Picture 1 (cartoon, rainbow, N blue to C red):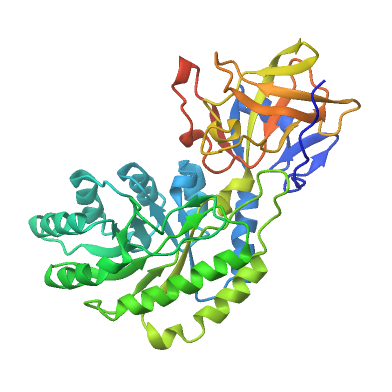
Picture 2: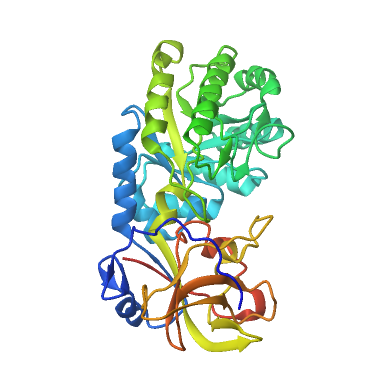
Length: 411
């Protein structure tokens, strides 16, 4: 018998009643009946609202919150958050259309990402959103498109600083990067931008993501603000937008603890003290995706078969890496670690065991839980993968082996 993996921090965001997980006040078994099939994703709107309230409580009041839609672009999720946050950030024309349909003011929507096509830039122009420029060439193309359309494009420069967000799950800056313009090249770019018919808005400086260390976030924010103030000296117009990124992480793996948001907010308040004198017109934005939605979502699949191979229990489900790639460990993990996984209709269970949860795909990579301690499950039981509200369905290879796509529901 294999040994159990280390335990995760308790997943306390969803209550348990009668040994069954509750999502949006609905027992998991009842929710599965309402959906009508498995697998499915379920997102709890109340948890998202509570997360926004928590951010408002701890961050300085002058800071605006933007939702980075790439974390979860489900239209119902975007529509819900559009009423709670101050702006939306998109990474494609497809996301832009969802953002515009949510009713968000186009002036509060920004578009980042390398490799924007002329079609996407033209669509952004027509919508009147802010385009975060990723290169000098993109700046020139946007200016040409604006002149042809008779529109003055709103533009900010995405900066690749010479520092990174330390201990970050994904580093987006420092060293050579495909994202943004190297900080040392930005002054020359600003000079050229001033000669073009572009409406300069400010800077977008995003250093990294999935960070659980308040001190690392504070250090990156301090360096970001200092860099923005330095670059503003060469700007052709006052800085009106300063997007300092986000990077706030959530605990996925054993040993990880939640981010100390109060410490982040207190440090940011100190950093922003006096910024009004240096950048008097700058609106400071924090851009968050995972932190807003990640803990509010679960992925649910059903046990189809229970197998024992040479003493090891395998729970074979109708879900897998084609729906939840990140939980399988194939979305950037160097050494595979388990997401929090449980038998959702037997949260405690009378008997517990060590088992692995696998999917129906013909690959050994299709592994949702490896040697985890959980309630003893049988055919028909519901497996829940927590922390699935961000980078779940749309970050997974849903066409792999031509299985049906899962359902999504906001409750």
